[in-house]
Length: 228
Image (cartoon, rainbow, N blue to C red; front, side, top):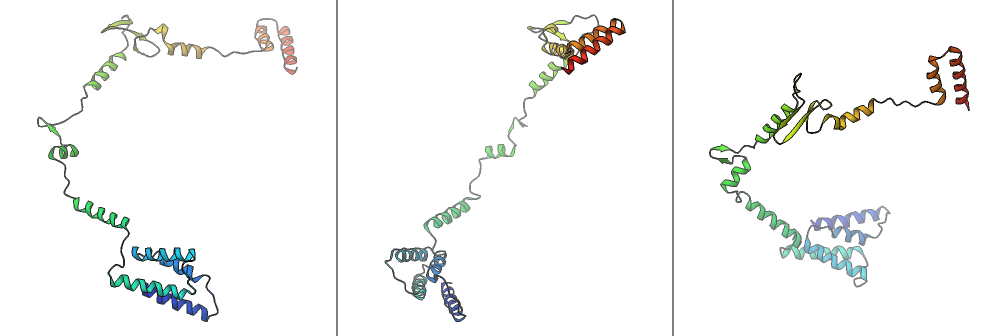
C-alpha cells in the first residue's frame, strides 16, 4: 500500500512540474499523509522524524528524501511482519471484544432468576398476582359516600370512629359540616354581585322611584361628573 502511495506521489508531483505548476510545501503534505497510515509502528516512526524535522535535528532538503525514508521503513516492517500493527489501545479493544464474544451464551441466569425475568415465577402452582383488595375497599368506601340521604332521613351518621355529614356542596358524605364547607363559602362569594358605581350611577338607580323630572336632573349631573 505504501509502495503504491509513494509511486503515485512521485508520478503526480512530476506531472505537476511538467505542466508548469508548483506544490506548496510538499514535505509537509507527505508528513500529514504518513501520519494517518494504519500502522502503529509506522506512525511512531514518522512521528519521531516529524518532531526532529520541526526541531531542526533532521534536514530534509527535498521531498524525495522523505519518500525514500518512508519506503525503506515500510520494507523493513513488512519483512519483519510488523506492518499493520495496532496501537496498544486498539489491541486492548480487540481483546475485550473477543472476550465478550466468547462469553456470549456462557453466562446464564439460574433457573429461579430466569423464571422471574420471564414473569413465570410461581408460588403454589399459581402466578403471583397483585393485591387488589385495597383498591376494592377504596371503591366500596367511595361508593356509599355518593349516596344521598333519603327524604326525612338524618343528614348526619356515624361510620366507624368518624361522624359524617351530608354536604350539599360536594354532594357527598364528608367529615366537615356543610356550614364549614370551603366550597360552599367559595360559591357564596362568587354569587355576590360585583357592583361598583359612581355617584351618578347610584343616583340614577335611586331616582327610578321618584318623579321623571328629578331623574332627568340627576342623569344630567352624572354626565357632567363623568366629563370632569
